Image 1 (cartoon, helix red, strand yellow):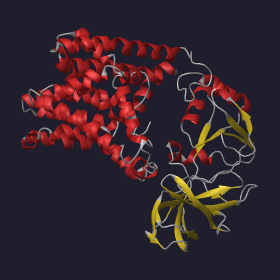
Image 2 (cartoon, helix red, strand yellow; image 1 turned 135 degrees about the vertical axis):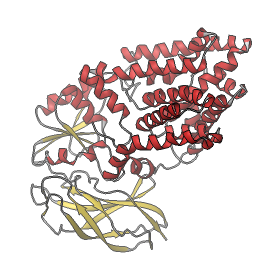
Image 3 (cartoon, one colour; image 1 turned 180 degrees about the vertical axis):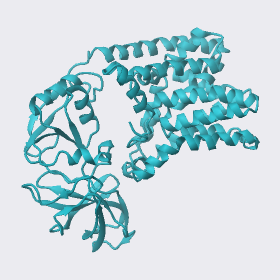
Image 4 (cartoon, one colour; image 1 turned 90 degrees about the horizontal axis):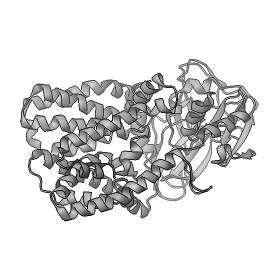
Length: 516
C-alpha cells in the first residue's frame, strides 16, 4: 500500500488490500467492491425516495455499468459510492447550514478525490449550480478539510515527480485524432447507461423540471459531466466509464419523470426486459466462457489462471519480464505466485512498475524469461489459449529503466533538420550502484522523436557512454546529441537506454519541441 499509484489515487487498491487480507483469492480482490456497489445502489435509492420500487430497480438494474462496475475492482465504484453519499449529505446541507454537515461533506469530497480525479468534474458542476453556498461561512470548511485529508496523496505526487498528472496530461495525451472518437463516445454512453433503458432515462432527465436547488444540482452535474467528455471527444479518445458519476443524477431525474408519466412508464418496463436479458447474458458470460474461439480477443474474465501457469511451466523459477503492460506481471504474480516485472519501452506512457526501481535492480545479472508479442527471435506460444505471444530466455539480463533522465534546459524551438548538443542529467534513485559495463551486451543511449503518438524518428544520442557506473543517489550530467525532424511541426522527444538487441527502455519524461 502507498498514498498513490501511477494513474489513480489509492482508494481501490485500499479496498483490494482489505479484501485480499481477509480472503487471498479472487473473492477477496472483489469483496469490498461488491459491498461498495450495493451501498451505492442503496444511496441512489435513498436520495430518489421512489414511490414505485419496481420501477426504480428496473431502471437501476438496467444500467450496464452498475453490473460490470459492481464486480470489477476499478476506481469507478468507490467514486460512485462517495459521490452518492456526498449527495445524501449535500441535500441536508442545503436545508440547514450546519458546520457538522459541512465537515461531513469535506470528508466525502476527500473520499471522492482518493477514488478518482474525475470526481472533480462532478463537484465543479454541483458548485456552479448553487454559487450562493459560497456566502456560507461553514462552506469553507469543505475545501479546507478535503485538502488537509488529501495532502498525503499530494505529497506523494510531489515526491514522485507527479507521475499521475504527467501520465494523464502529457504521456498519454498524444492520440492522433480520429472522427470515430465522437461516435465511440456517444455509442459507449448509450451502451453503459442502458443499453435500451438509457433512452427513457435521458429523455426523462431532459424533461423533468428541477423543483429545488438539489435537483438543479443534479441537472448541472449530469449534463456537465456528459458535456465535458463529449467536448473532450472532439480532440482525444475517451473511455465510456469516465462518465460514471452521471449515473446517479440520471437515475434520479429519469425516475422522477417516468414515474409520473404512465405512457413512458409502460415503455420503460418493456425496454427493461431486453436490457435485463442482455445483462443477464453478460453475467452468465462472466461465469462461463461460451463465446466461440477468437470472438473475444480481450477476454478479461476467463483462463488467466491457465495463462499464468502456461508461462510458469516455461519460466520455472526464473523471473518473468513483460514489456509495456502492468496487467501481464500483475496477473502472473497473482496466479503463478512467482516474481515478474514490467519493462516499459521508449514509446510507452509508463505504468506502476516504473515507480519500483528496486525491483528492476534485483533482476540484474539473472536469467529471466521475457514474454511479449513482438520479440525478435522469440519462440511462439499461446498461453492460456487466449494470447499469441513469444518468449525468450535471456541470460545475464540487464536493463536501466531505473535511471531517470532529465533535460534541465530543453530547447522549445529548433530549426528543421538540425543537430544540437544537449546536457542531460542522470540520477540513480536506488540503493545500489548502476554499472553500465557489466554484462555481455553493449549499452547505448538513444533518443526518440514522436509526432502525436507515432514514432517519427530515432537515433543514437551518444556513441560511447562516458562513465562505467552511477553510484547510489548519484547525479551526473552528460553531453548528448538530438537531431530535429526535417518536417516543421509539433513534436515530443525523450531518451532511453538500449541493451544489445532488446527494446529501447524508457528513462525520461517527454519534452515538447516545436520545429520551424
